[in-house]
Image 1: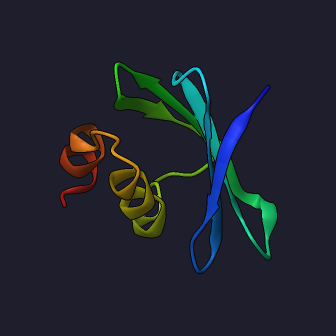
Image 2: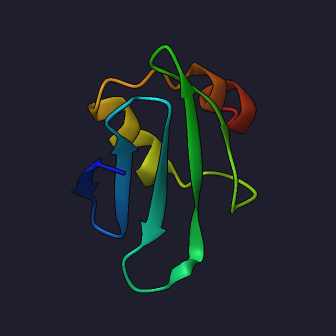
Amino acid sequence: MTYKVTETANYEVALHNNGDSGYFEHLELGEDRAGGLWFDNGKIYDYDGVYMLPKEVIDELKNRGVDTSYLEEENGL
């Protein structure tokens, strides 16, 4: 699998080149604070691994052009 990977202050955020999935992982805590991301037509519709997706990850998804309205509604942002 090929991913485009970027880093924020605390997370690695990766989006699969086919646009339908990705992952995030904390730079220090690794898999203890990580999970999967799923997309449909540029819009995130699901994630796993954490109760609430960290705002830092949401912001990076926005920066990369992902429609995050699902997350904003779910998290009250």
